[in-house]
Length: 55
Image: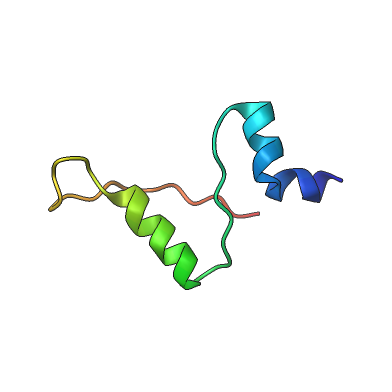
């Protein structure tokens, strides 16, 4: 059950109040998510750093 809780987007949102995006490592979807969240609004030449948590 604990494993399911980690990857259930709906449950994470309900319990913690934030959105969770799930993608396989090094997949196109993963790269798209990272690229999107590195963007800085109104400053396209800049990128934000991200914290990656692995278990």
